[in-house]
Length: 207
Image (cartoon, rainbow, N blue to C red):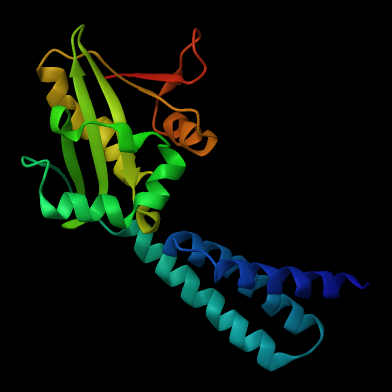
Protein backbone atom coordinates (compact mmCIF):
# COMPACT_ATOMS: atom_id res chain seq x y z
CA UNK A 1 0.00 0.00 0.00
CA UNK A 2 1.38 3.41 -0.99
CA UNK A 3 1.80 6.11 1.64
CA UNK A 4 -0.79 8.39 0.06
CA UNK A 5 -3.38 5.60 0.24
CA UNK A 6 -2.75 5.42 3.99
CA UNK A 7 -3.35 9.19 4.21
CA UNK A 8 -6.60 8.77 2.26
CA UNK A 9 -7.85 5.94 4.46
CA UNK A 10 -6.90 7.88 7.61
CA UNK A 11 -8.78 10.94 6.40
CA UNK A 12 -11.84 8.86 5.52
CA UNK A 13 -11.78 7.14 8.90
CA UNK A 14 -11.54 10.40 10.84
CA UNK A 15 -14.40 11.98 8.88
CA UNK A 16 -16.54 8.90 9.53
CA UNK A 17 -15.69 8.92 13.25
CA UNK A 18 -16.46 12.65 13.52
CA UNK A 19 -19.99 12.08 12.26
CA UNK A 20 -20.64 9.71 15.16
CA UNK A 21 -19.71 12.30 17.82
CA UNK A 22 -22.49 13.85 19.91
CA UNK A 23 -20.32 16.66 21.22
CA UNK A 24 -20.14 19.34 18.53
CA UNK A 25 -16.68 20.45 19.68
CA UNK A 26 -15.24 16.95 19.34
CA UNK A 27 -17.04 16.57 16.01
CA UNK A 28 -15.42 19.74 14.65
CA UNK A 29 -11.97 18.79 15.93
CA UNK A 30 -11.93 15.31 14.49
CA UNK A 31 -13.64 16.41 11.28
CA UNK A 32 -10.92 19.05 10.85
CA UNK A 33 -8.14 16.44 10.89
CA UNK A 34 -10.13 14.10 8.66
CA UNK A 35 -10.80 16.79 6.05
CA UNK A 36 -7.18 17.99 6.25
CA UNK A 37 -5.74 14.53 5.56
CA UNK A 38 -8.29 13.89 2.83
CA UNK A 39 -7.44 17.18 1.13
CA UNK A 40 -3.74 16.20 1.18
CA UNK A 41 -4.72 12.84 -0.32
CA UNK A 42 -6.66 14.59 -3.08
CA UNK A 43 -3.65 16.80 -3.86
CA UNK A 44 -1.26 13.83 -3.97
CA UNK A 45 -3.38 11.85 -6.43
CA UNK A 46 -4.21 15.04 -8.40
CA UNK A 47 -7.92 14.72 -7.67
CA UNK A 48 -8.35 18.46 -7.38
CA UNK A 49 -12.12 18.49 -6.67
CA UNK A 50 -11.42 16.28 -3.63
CA UNK A 51 -8.59 18.62 -2.57
CA UNK A 52 -10.67 21.79 -2.97
CA UNK A 53 -13.78 20.43 -1.22
CA UNK A 54 -11.92 19.05 1.80
CA UNK A 55 -9.65 22.09 1.96
CA UNK A 56 -12.78 24.21 2.17
CA UNK A 57 -14.20 21.96 4.95
CA UNK A 58 -10.89 22.32 6.82
CA UNK A 59 -11.14 26.11 6.71
CA UNK A 60 -14.78 26.03 7.86
CA UNK A 61 -13.85 23.78 10.80
CA UNK A 62 -11.04 26.16 11.81
CA UNK A 63 -13.46 29.09 11.66
CA UNK A 64 -16.10 27.47 13.88
CA UNK A 65 -13.56 26.05 16.32
CA UNK A 66 -12.09 29.52 16.68
CA UNK A 67 -15.55 30.96 17.36
CA UNK A 68 -16.32 28.24 19.91
CA UNK A 69 -13.16 28.77 21.93
CA UNK A 70 -13.24 32.56 21.73
CA UNK A 71 -16.90 32.88 22.67
CA UNK A 72 -17.59 34.32 26.11
CA UNK A 73 -20.27 32.25 27.78
CA UNK A 74 -22.38 33.15 30.77
CA UNK A 75 -22.52 30.55 33.55
CA UNK A 76 -24.90 30.42 36.48
CA UNK A 77 -25.57 27.96 39.28
CA UNK A 78 -29.29 27.96 40.04
CA UNK A 79 -30.66 26.15 43.12
CA UNK A 80 -33.58 23.75 42.72
CA UNK A 81 -35.84 24.82 45.57
CA UNK A 82 -38.54 22.22 44.90
CA UNK A 83 -37.00 18.73 44.60
CA UNK A 84 -40.26 17.45 43.12
CA UNK A 85 -40.19 20.06 40.38
CA UNK A 86 -41.42 18.69 37.04
CA UNK A 87 -38.36 19.86 35.08
CA UNK A 88 -35.91 18.23 37.51
CA UNK A 89 -37.75 14.92 37.20
CA UNK A 90 -37.92 15.24 33.40
CA UNK A 91 -34.19 16.06 33.23
CA UNK A 92 -33.28 13.02 35.34
CA UNK A 93 -35.54 10.75 33.33
CA UNK A 94 -34.35 12.01 29.94
CA UNK A 95 -30.64 11.61 30.75
CA UNK A 96 -31.08 8.61 33.04
CA UNK A 97 -29.06 6.16 30.94
CA UNK A 98 -26.15 8.56 30.46
CA UNK A 99 -26.12 9.64 34.12
CA UNK A 100 -25.97 6.02 35.20
CA UNK A 101 -22.75 5.49 33.21
CA UNK A 102 -20.91 8.01 35.39
CA UNK A 103 -22.95 7.70 38.60
CA UNK A 104 -24.15 4.06 38.76
CA UNK A 105 -25.89 4.49 42.12
CA UNK A 106 -27.51 7.88 41.58
CA UNK A 107 -31.05 6.45 41.70
CA UNK A 108 -30.46 5.62 45.36
CA UNK A 109 -29.96 9.29 46.25
CA UNK A 110 -32.56 10.99 48.40
CA UNK A 111 -32.81 14.27 46.52
CA UNK A 112 -35.14 15.76 49.13
CA UNK A 113 -32.35 15.75 51.75
CA UNK A 114 -29.65 17.08 49.40
CA UNK A 115 -28.92 20.43 47.74
CA UNK A 116 -29.54 20.44 43.98
CA UNK A 117 -28.39 23.01 41.44
CA UNK A 118 -28.81 23.36 37.70
CA UNK A 119 -25.73 24.56 35.85
CA UNK A 120 -26.83 27.11 33.24
CA UNK A 121 -24.68 28.02 30.26
CA UNK A 122 -26.07 30.99 28.33
CA UNK A 123 -29.33 30.16 30.15
CA UNK A 124 -29.31 26.57 28.86
CA UNK A 125 -29.53 23.89 31.59
CA UNK A 126 -26.43 21.86 30.73
CA UNK A 127 -25.69 20.15 34.01
CA UNK A 128 -26.93 19.08 37.42
CA UNK A 129 -25.00 19.31 40.68
CA UNK A 130 -26.17 17.48 43.81
CA UNK A 131 -24.22 18.08 47.02
CA UNK A 132 -24.38 17.50 50.75
CA UNK A 133 -23.07 20.08 53.19
CA UNK A 134 -21.43 17.94 55.86
CA UNK A 135 -20.06 18.70 59.28
CA UNK A 136 -16.35 19.23 59.51
CA UNK A 137 -16.26 21.99 56.87
CA UNK A 138 -16.60 19.59 53.93
CA UNK A 139 -18.95 19.43 50.95
CA UNK A 140 -19.60 16.02 49.43
CA UNK A 141 -20.61 15.77 45.77
CA UNK A 142 -23.14 13.05 45.02
CA UNK A 143 -23.81 14.01 41.42
CA UNK A 144 -21.95 16.28 39.01
CA UNK A 145 -23.44 15.62 35.59
CA UNK A 146 -22.98 17.50 32.31
CA UNK A 147 -25.04 16.69 29.22
CA UNK A 148 -23.04 15.25 26.26
CA UNK A 149 -22.97 18.37 24.06
CA UNK A 150 -21.39 20.45 26.84
CA UNK A 151 -18.90 18.00 28.30
CA UNK A 152 -15.80 20.13 27.73
CA UNK A 153 -14.63 20.95 31.30
CA UNK A 154 -15.83 24.59 31.14
CA UNK A 155 -18.88 23.94 33.32
CA UNK A 156 -16.86 21.92 35.81
CA UNK A 157 -14.15 24.56 36.09
CA UNK A 158 -16.81 27.23 36.61
CA UNK A 159 -18.55 25.26 39.36
CA UNK A 160 -15.44 24.17 41.25
CA UNK A 161 -13.43 27.36 40.86
CA UNK A 162 -15.84 30.29 40.73
CA UNK A 163 -18.92 29.00 42.56
CA UNK A 164 -17.05 27.29 45.39
CA UNK A 165 -16.00 30.73 46.64
CA UNK A 166 -19.53 31.09 48.00
CA UNK A 167 -19.14 27.97 50.12
CA UNK A 168 -15.72 29.16 51.24
CA UNK A 169 -17.36 32.24 52.77
CA UNK A 170 -19.57 29.86 54.76
CA UNK A 171 -16.51 28.22 56.29
CA UNK A 172 -16.15 25.13 54.11
CA UNK A 173 -12.58 24.06 53.36
CA UNK A 174 -12.81 21.08 51.02
CA UNK A 175 -15.08 19.45 48.46
CA UNK A 176 -14.92 15.70 47.95
CA UNK A 177 -16.49 12.89 45.97
CA UNK A 178 -16.29 9.14 45.43
CA UNK A 179 -15.96 7.72 41.92
CA UNK A 180 -15.11 4.30 40.54
CA UNK A 181 -15.65 5.33 36.90
CA UNK A 182 -12.37 5.90 35.05
CA UNK A 183 -13.71 8.60 32.70
CA UNK A 184 -15.13 10.55 35.61
CA UNK A 185 -11.92 10.14 37.58
CA UNK A 186 -10.02 11.67 34.65
CA UNK A 187 -12.49 14.57 34.60
CA UNK A 188 -11.99 15.15 38.33
CA UNK A 189 -8.21 15.25 37.90
CA UNK A 190 -8.57 17.76 35.04
CA UNK A 191 -10.55 20.21 37.17
CA UNK A 192 -8.20 20.10 40.14
CA UNK A 193 -9.26 17.21 42.36
CA UNK A 194 -6.58 15.03 43.92
CA UNK A 195 -6.87 11.31 44.59
CA UNK A 196 -6.78 10.36 48.26
CA UNK A 197 -3.74 8.31 49.27
CA UNK A 198 -5.95 6.19 51.52
CA UNK A 199 -8.69 5.41 49.00
CA UNK A 200 -8.11 5.44 45.23
CA UNK A 201 -11.78 6.21 44.57
CA UNK A 202 -11.90 9.20 46.92
CA UNK A 203 -11.13 12.60 45.38
CA UNK A 204 -10.61 15.86 47.28
CA UNK A 205 -10.21 19.50 46.26
CA UNK A 206 -9.44 22.44 48.51
CA UNK A 207 -11.84 25.35 48.14
